[in-house]
Image 1 (spheres, rainbow, N blue to C red):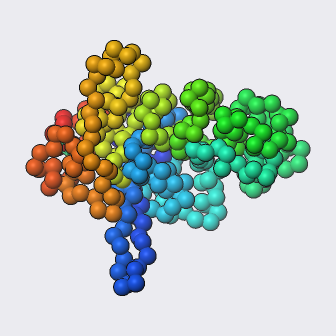
Image 2: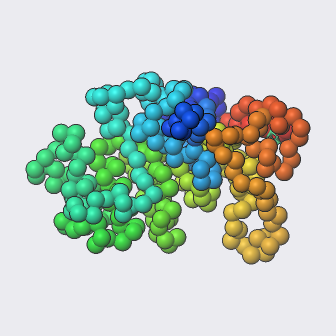
Image 3: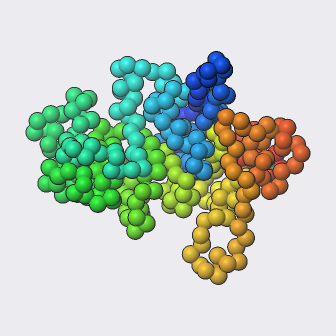
Amino acid sequence: MTTLVPEELLGLTGLAVHFTGRRNWRGNRPPPVRAVDGVTFSVGKQETLGLVGESGCGKSTLGNAVLRLVHPTAGQIRFDGRDVTRLDGEELRDLRRDVQMIFQDPYSALNPKIRVGESIGEPLLAHGIAQGKALDDQVSELLGLVGLPPERASRYPHEFSGGQRQRLVIARALALKPRLIVCDEPVSALDVSIRSQILNLLMEFQQKLGLSYLFISHDLSVVRHISHRVAVMYLGRVVELAPRDNLFQEPLHPYTEALISAIPLPDPVAQRQRKRIILKGELPKPTAPPPGCPFHTRCPIAQPMCREKVPPLEEKRPGHWAACHLRS
Ligand code: SF4
């Protein structure tokens, strides 16, 4: 990226994750699922990059690849200037101190049979950072940091509300003092009333602790609230990437326009007058992506050339990238 991007912490170049199915009884393999198909972007130091798209577009697989929970098929992952694509053993363990994850469902992220203090302290124990009284002190500090009374360390997850459980998950993610957190739909399972509390908490920690976030969500309003830049994914590829305000005020890609037109407006009059772009058809299968532009089967302005030629992701305006033949 050439402009408007802070110094890179995480960098992806041509990242692909394809899943190959088992052979059938005839010995034939089904076509691979191209979950992530050549993604290039970076997340800067102390930056939040929002990653949006419909369910099944590959955004969670991309997050898992960054954490090396799935193996990349091709491409490169860099962390703080170092190629970490194929790390294993001790080096991968070290990377996982620096890169943590927060998942959608805080309840399943916490072992229901273990006291929350033990869950939060588990990474510190596993990495040999603290034990005994020092471990208890650090757990108390982490609970205080996320706004929960330290004496509740001896309680079990079911004794907390959904929002409090997500605070516990954040406390555990912060235990190893990571530099990047991959947040995968971290507020989708929460009541609307507590979503902004959790988002504000994440933003506060970014300021206090100098964190970077790769923030994955299907919800554009949430992404708008927290992100500095936003990448839009469709069928395993990034189709638009821009600073937040540029993306929401002047989207270039027809898919982004359709997503933005579906965000409800607070003003009922403006909502009634606004023209919503309804996409026809379903998201194509990632086993059989359409030729040419992957969006051409649903694009309201597609031209014959769109069926033949893949549009590259190009910097159309400073810092504003889009993959569309017709937009400049
Ligand atoms: Fe639509 Fe063609 Fe642009 Fe693809 S390249 S988004 S099909 S106009």
